[in-house]
Image 1 (cartoon, rainbow, N blue to C red):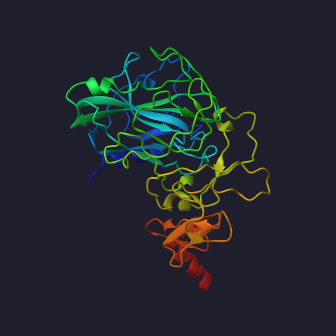
Image 2: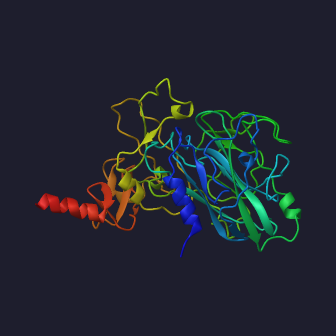
Image 3: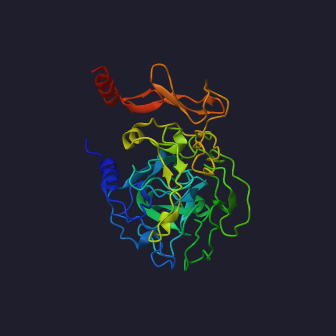
Length: 389
């Protein structure tokens, strides 16, 4: 059966990246064919890059269902904070009211030191969220807004059409939801103007009751820049299934948060004078092939977050490997070299050695972990045949 959602994501993945490979929202499926640039600092293309609001696929949202926020691109800008918001307007304007249904404070869209290599595979992490009962029935517009941690002070916003079912019959509960936070752009009615402080994750003045944290910070208030407390990881109050459905981002194949052999190390290569401001963001490099990156197993939604490692202090220091989100140092399979990839005896599981223990997880279907590396089974068999010959 033809899946328009998969087809759209495939097209985005096949499309050539711009010089900075900014992120684009892949799911929910956005309007039209969005470019990957942030909104103009003047606010001229607020909201949603000012359309056009042509519907590629209508995203069906049933209240209580679990939906997925996912992306394509490589320039994750070290993370930052983001929100999922909804307006009742089918074609939003500057005067539209966007109401927050889910806040992600830190680690959005990824919890890494800089950007992924521009020529590498697209980052495929995702965040599950539950459609809340405050939404009224009918067609609405959903928005993903993001304030990046590293790089130019920018505001990203991508919008998608959604049809809500099983929701409220009036606007009372919806109107009581918090307003979407706006920063780094001007001339947004009722939002004021503020600039975020670089190299921080951000807490929102009113994130709402549906929220999560995916980073250890440091955290500052979005607009004042004042130091703030790190939000508690995991889902906030008001979860529709006892708290589990509102947990934060699920590391995907090749995601550093998944604790894969693709664990990132910041690049020490200086940026040329002709590079764009965005490309000056540190690049996280992966010591494995693109094939391996695409075949690492997906990890389930985390219940806790641990900090990413600092950048190497010199070219000779051993690369630091992030602890898999959800792992607790000291638990797992004993190991001797921190940062090493540990394979199970049958090759069906792998883990990253951390504090003398490795949290083991299953490899992706069709792959095998052997001698500290993960590869497709066919490639592994072929290498063995050549060795025998």
